[in-house]
Amino acid sequence: MARDIAYVALGSNLGDRDAYLASARRALAAIPRTQLLAESQVEETEPLGPVKQGPYLNQMVALETELSPRELLAELQRIEGNAGRIRTERWGPRTLDLDIVRFEHQTAVEPDLVVPHPAADDRDFWRREMAELRSLLGRR
Image 1 (cartoon, rainbow, N blue to C red):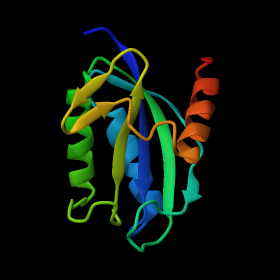
Image 2 (image 1 turned 90 degrees about the vertical axis):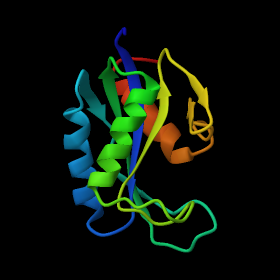
Image 3 (image 1 turned 45 degrees about the horizontal axis):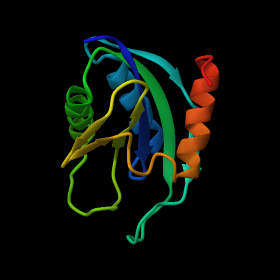
Image 4 (image 1 turned 135 degrees about the vertical axis):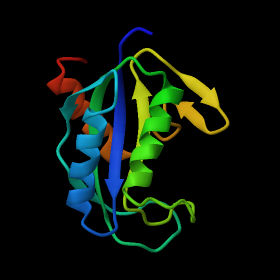
């Protein structure tokens, strides 16, 4: 598999949010056949969806990886599980949420995986973070 750039969103709104994001960055950097290239600033945002909950800390990272979207998703779900993520309520609070926002050269359309993420262009904070990463990487 050729190397590609994946943009992954990190979010947390339970417990020590800063620590969850820091742990996630370390875990992402340790994924086999993957290198953490850049990270956006961390920002606090209001939660999305109908569930009442506290604000999120959000950040996005750029990963250079040989993994397919499906393989990367499996790694992200493993990292979320290690952070105590329990999938109970859609749009509910979480210790750690990791989303593949997009790959530069790959797409996926499967029942549980769509790349680019369907909300990739709808979330202002994702657009800001993506622009910051692309600037850091010298991309338009």
